[in-house]
Image 1 (cartoon, rainbow, N blue to C red):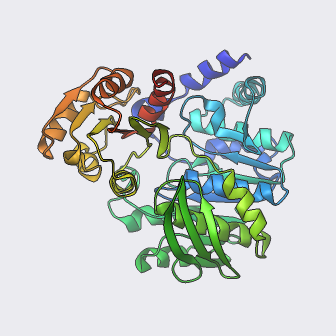
Image 2 (image 1 turned 180 degrees about the vertical axis):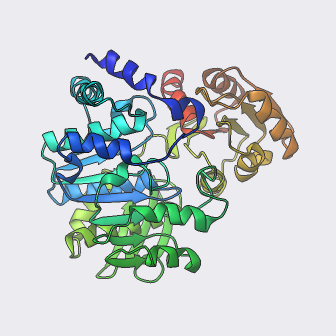
Image 3 (image 1 turned 90 degrees about the horizontal axis):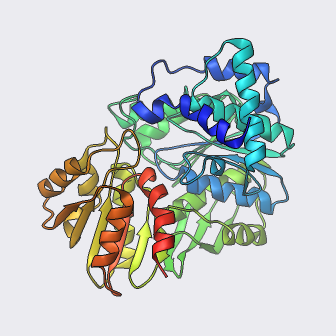
Length: 431
């Protein structure tokens, strides 16, 4: 199987990606695939991460902390921005095209032999576990794709189960309350799991406390952020864990919320090792953290920022960072697209779209992309004065760049599909 054939095989199985529907949520298919492979998900200890927002940033911080501690780390995340290879990394390096095709072909062979028909995420997850086993990683950092209980990654038995936070997202599968969402996410907690919880609402924490884990550490009680200051390129923070106070930690990611993610990540790795971390390890790890498409500054004069906020909670954080941390002096241009199933009024209100001088709406490049005309109507409903539509992300960015002067700022957001299309186009368009 070539790389192109592997991509075509995945595309043929991409039902959820194309429709947004999951017909029968279950672990049966991934469990059977893993059994046929010899259960590679048990080849190394696992840090398993769920939550509404912050999973990707927390996964990267945990990965870098484990790497700086001398371990060989396999990390599986989703979704990707530009290439599916981004989902599979060892020590921060994505899987090669040839290795990717080899692992996908192995799953395809099992499908033909067994009669199982796995979906896109089942295939990728099984391929990740097989690759990590082949490469003999020391530890796996696994990010949940959707909720937790019946997510394909939940065939692992996590040594450390991490919950970043709980918000209202994917309520078509778990809702309508945060408690409903939390109960689904609590499904990743196994009897031997040490649980590290970044959520602080007592009624939600109780759900995780009663999920049957071996232990529980909660942000605000057992660990916390003691100071959190704006710094060049990110935040300067001091963190308190159950064992140690770490002072003057530089987190090279934008937004106050990244300090909370750092506190969760450091506590999770302390819990994994059952000991404190050296300050040098933390400094080395944090200095290497990068998050493409998460409040990523792509250019200056004009300031161009892309962010993958795709739900109201994430959009609210995105807007806070844009207006409060960056506080652009000139005109503000919003390029936005999102998926069907999102409430566009809620998304645009959370983004504070009415505070932008120009809003350019575009369809997310996905079969589930919301038409730009629907976003335009929503933008007008939430009070935006100047609203336009564009036929694509690329044309929307061109319009924004043509409009913006050196002192202005452009924010591109609303969907990871939008950011995935925007990132290479902005890189080419800017000098």
